[in-house]
Image (cartoon, rainbow, N blue to C red; front, side, top):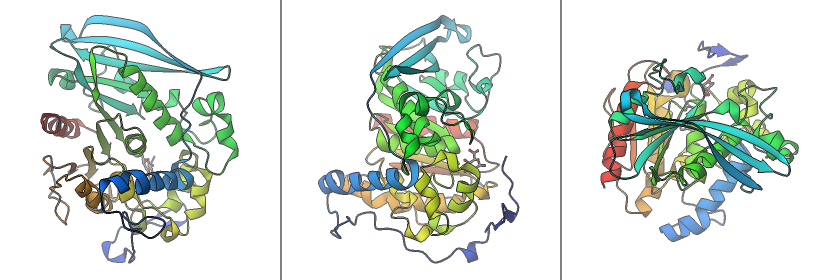
Length: 386
Ligand code: GTR
């Protein structure tokens, strides 16, 4: 649970804009050799790989890409779910490596009213499994499946705990100790966020085999710790066509150097098991990090990305999240992509949709809700029509 007093875990938490320190962001277009990136070729061939390896080495850890085998088992199919509007599929994704395996169950609803393969929203579920109830006894605003289906999209989800439990003493029991135990012994081994990200790509592997889905139109969605994960997944796996990140805050969309609300030091104290061990060495020297989070946003380019904040969620630094977006624009410009972002964050409840980088700041608290999903659909509708 979040505690949002001005003092937390022995540290002062700053919520005063006038006390944000002066900072200089690492140059997004400046290569390690000092040269400036001038076109998308040199972004893609030189600078983008450099930035990815900096995020791996210092923040989220390495990302293994090989395994021995993967199998998809349809465990349940209901062709007339949601009063006949959708087909429910429950699928177990079974991945083997060096004699050990992990099973990732997914829940998927596909609209029955369709003429061709449909686009899909994939939620990384970091809350209770009740939120993605396949039987629809629980209808959660965190995953408003009926609304998505009625808009012509499929909707799917996997639960983070099936990949890596969201706990400091057991996060390794899953993808990490079963498939990639060597990750446990290095300073830049992946931890929980890495395992969740890896799993999102395995779900994508399944989507590519499902004839009812348009694998060219898969949107990845995450909230908070799940929103940090959706950004990292979108950065690494180009198959995700759209990336949505709700209230992702520190180590997600928000600039670390502002030190407003949650800081690297605080997130390492509370949630060190999400990040590579080396991240701890930056707790008290944020200005020495060779990246900041605007560079994570830029890794989506030229694909559309949309982030959100909530007014009452100061812990996640809404302004710092918006500034990450504006500082990623130069990379979108290399692709000739236009951004409709102004220098200052938009007014409350005024979504920016017609822009490669989209955003809204909504009223209310730290959450993912129907208002957010409505705007995700608007953003997807707009960009898929372009
Ligand atoms: C908070 C954490 C945030 C955010 C959030 C969540 O306690 O400090 O970084 O990830 O949890 O996932 O809801």
